[in-house]
Length: 89
Image 1 (cartoon, rainbow, N blue to C red):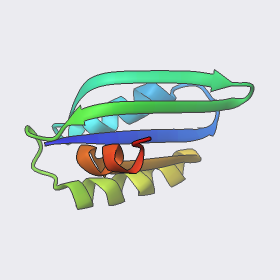
Image 2 (cartoon, rainbow, N blue to C red):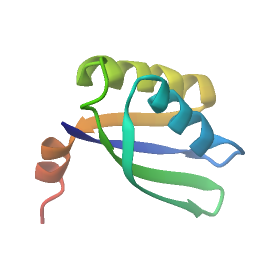
Image 3 (cartoon, helix red, strand yellow):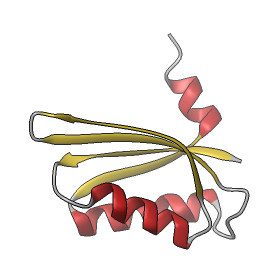
Image 4 (cartoon, rainbow, N blue to C red):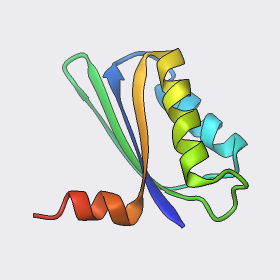
């Protein structure tokens, strides 16, 4: 199963490292990643594969949101199909 992880917040050192390590600890593989800095704000979107993880999508979403609060970022996880449906033109 694939999911989309979005991360947004004030730019600071180590965001990608913290998020990717957090996901790796849960057996989540990053398939694709894009990030940018808009003035002082960091924005990242990742396509991830959950097939190697024992953590379910709902639990992962909750854990990522909580970890995001700890580092001062907004971190959201959505099933890839839901993300695509929400962003069709």
